[in-house]
Image (cartoon, rainbow, N blue to C red; front, side, top):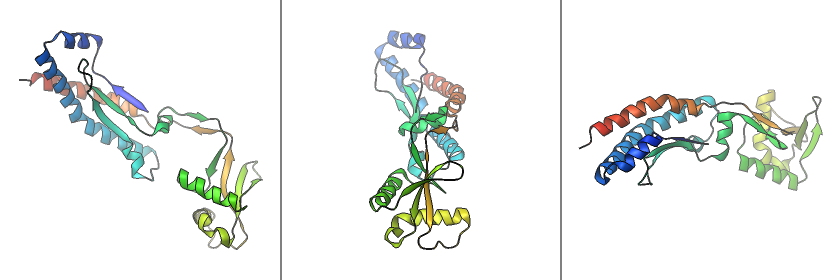
Length: 214
């Protein structure tokens, strides 16, 4: 997801080119200072919204959302970039659907890499099989056997907690994940609106910095 805020209308860019070299450089630096002064608060506000709207397990997910000033082009005014390095995070901003068969873990969340490794280990050991339940859903099951205590540990713990079972007997069937043909994601974030509400304050800060130039 990328949101780029530019205080750089065509008229402002034309004016920047007409200004003398030294004055133009001062204007660019003033604009960049103003943007940097606001970038930290915008970043924290974005991360706070993500944390309030989503169940965040890893702090690294929140740190993926950032705000920084882009100021490499000497012929253009700086721009404020607000976005995330996580490529699929934009789905939570817009909503949408993924039309592909996917295995979704049951009874809690599991990291993508860990989940894949656990399923692969169960498959290699011949202890993973699909059934169709009473609701018509395709569910991946595994048998509670000693040889697979390690990959099944998390699944068993979450299953017991969800069903209120204190102990699972050996040989019991454990539901691992459900196979779905399509995943629909609802809009959960509104970062664009959050950033847009801060533009007047950012513009005022830019004007203040320009007025105080030497």
